[in-house]
Image (tube, rainbow, N blue to C red; front, top):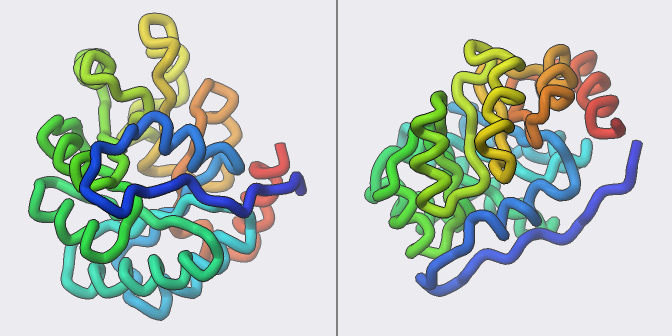
Length: 218
């Protein structure tokens, strides 16, 4: 397995505008994988975040859909701080959820779709923003807005062939493939030009963890 960075990209502690592109360039420099821990509660989220960090996956995201999710996010943020890791909040649909994420100490937000108001709210709160796209039109809107890192969702339905097609008109855009991703198809999407693959349930399966280690060591 290749060596991994232990330092984390810097998050603004004051509500100053954050450069999302620069943040994710640093956040995803060490590993081509991101962990998504959805609805797992506090204890299980802590366990799987530790599994991800031990494996070499620095980027961890907890979607925010319930009060328990917010508690889990705050707990994982605290655990990550002890290891020099930063944690993001997912399923951020509006400015109110940005506030919840910021209060919990998240370093970045992830959204299923492209809403520039959420991007602005995130960056103004000191959090980097990773919005979702699924079409050339959305990628173009994001590009014009200055966004260079985008979440492609749902990636498994878009298919690996979607990414080289987008690379033609948008060579500067870096994609995080999310939705239906696992240790068995990660390599296919990375070979297609995806910069990062987001995985979730694979972290609960020892056999899948071994395959993820192979992906990281590529």
